[in-house]
Image (cartoon, rainbow, N blue to C red; front, side, top):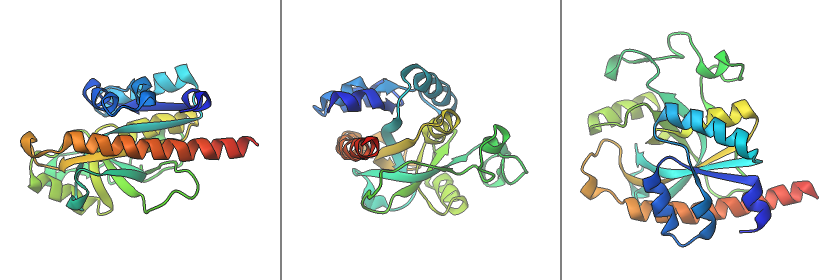
Length: 225
């Protein structure tokens, strides 16, 4: 990866576990990835700190996620176009009401233009395919029933993670575009880890991240001319 890309792109991943898997992919630039921490609170705080410290032109978050639908994507990687947040509001399970449903907006409360708390993610121009919607949750689904409830409430979301919305919010606050790549390791709600495809998903995520970063760098170079 060119030195200019290393300076202008900030690569993030939630955990040391995911970082170790990225390093085994053999891509030298991924070894420089910074850890945000696990979950929506730690990742948002740490991402804000890292963006302030490194002053990047673009942020890419990469890690694993669970599929809410389209289960043929397990072992593959997805790039997302938008991200929503589930778990902040009133009640839990089927009785949960989101912050937006009870009249609050986390994003709008800090001056962002997002009354529904959906955050758009950055994509380089001419990016191929149909990027999907991601759902960030405070706690991963523990059963297919919980996953199905989330799928019904967020009908466009294809996968759940625990950091994407918070990192996207950090980027929005700092005025920095954020992209998210997730390797789909399992069905959301499946807690039997022996059925997960973590290594395969992270290898796919490493491949996708490399392609995405090259497209981002090409766009930034073109814009600078």
